[in-house]
Image 1 (cartoon, rainbow, N blue to C red):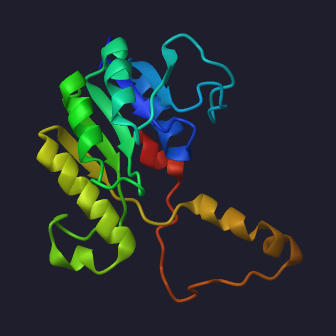
Image 2 (image 1 turned 135 degrees about the vertical axis):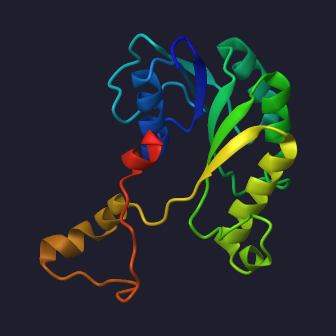
Image 3 (image 1 turned 90 degrees about the horizontal axis):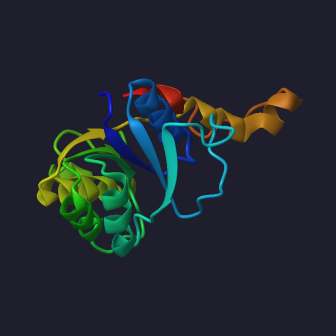
Length: 187
């Protein structure tokens, strides 16, 4: 919405940069929360008006309060930190205490149904994402989890094989959605 401040964590990633660009297109003032504020951001050759780079690290909750308060953001785009010992609960608590009332979490298609579903405990990727979704829910922040599957850019891993004319597929019988990271960011 117009004149709304949004903070995007991970804006150097394909989905995060697309989320930042889309939020700006919709009229938001976008704060780009980064560990390294000089790192390039896909789709933004510079930092044009309406975007502000700010230092913050989702794995270090003590950096989040200042970033959110300085930005005045009430909405955040976040992603899963696999190394978080508390499934990001302390990060979500810091975001909420600083004023975040709504978050979009980049999760995974591996999470099936409710994050609390016992089936989500059997696979590592599903478990980490589901536990992060549960921690976000427990924080009291209103949120949306986005659960994309296979990014179409993953085929770039096969670039050399494509050039040679022979591609070995890891799971040839599995059907993937081949979604564009930029399309996920539009959500």
